[in-house]
Length: 254
Length: 267
Image 1 (cartoon, rainbow over the protein chains, first blue to last red):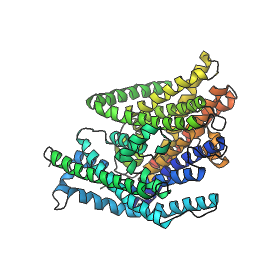
Image 2 (tube, rainbow over the protein chains, first blue to last red; image 1 turned 120 degrees about the vertical axis):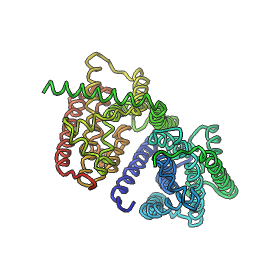
Image 3 (tube, rainbow over the protein chains, first blue to last red; image 1 turned 90 degrees about the horizontal axis):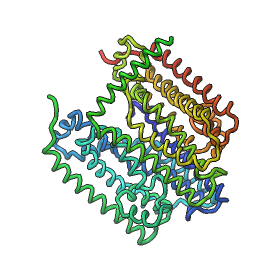
């Protein structure tokens, strides 16, 4: 990672550009709208949503799918299996190392930028340390869901050979279902309620709504509970899938 | 010159046939990538539809006009993706792993060889959505269509796709010096997200960048504007062709310099 620091920075810049596209599209929406709120979101809410959902997506991202796929394909998964620690743990700690650096670089500037923007537009400081801490805790839950979900999905590499394609397919579907493209609140009522029950809304939508202060009291506890529920489900599922596939694994070559 | 082009086209066909044979072996692969790209576009269409569910016009643009520009932007992108996807690999690993040696030892132009080697059927996902959007939004747009205009669309799309290819060649070439430039290509490539929407929703700075610096506006907005309004063909179509030629030339110049700086990896 640190060897290709510049390369990684370009990648993040490329991703941030996508945020700016949404930013300008929403700005145009609010201009066309006469500056009124859009389905309960005013302009500053929308800006916070766009950038915080991007940031949350980065914080909780997990590369398990791709790595497992590659390792199954080239056989290097064997090297992990001969180590006397849990298979999942080797991935987890490898990833946490990378993640700390990533977050260090983008987290503070983005949160600061969002808060300064919000202060400049609304004229009041909306940053609430308690909400922020709850947000961080929810990000940890969201990361756990994503981590185990990706491990489960990674084993589809036994079926799909096109890793780039299947990974992109997953990312697209997940980013839509998690509310990263449109806030789920904007979707038709029925669809919204279905998506809120699915595990993916716990990934981005829940933490961001908490950060924005849209959830309070019992609602907050309920959604945090949903997150924990899904984290446990995927954790168990990854164990089950591991037990099933490990006997079918055959490694080619010497 | 003419014979060389014929030879190149013939070889390109052989490369594509080889690739298609590979796909018949992994049929599922083809579907996963294409379906993924198709869904990615569908999500954005839902996004636009949600917006237009609440407001009748986006800065003066109607729903079907925005859809037309969106659809138009996908087709040159898909064409470049379909034929010249291998340029990504140059920046990500071909140079870094020293695999570029292979291209230098063959009796054909290395740039042509790299570009022609892969045929990326995933691109059909974007292509299909682009064509559907164009054909759905066309009936509601009052423009007269003649054979001349249809030809212009084809010319505009082909040259627009060269803008993508030129930018990819130029940024991939940076790998000859730095070993790895895939993410630089990625950063430039992501700029194309801006031109899926009419560029006059952006501020002056963004608009100037999209027109003069990374001229993706010529891959969708300007040519699409001509077909939407029938105005200014000389600028909207003519400049698309000129810009495509300029970008392609710059790309090839960087490539030619880079290839001299190439050092193989390993022992």
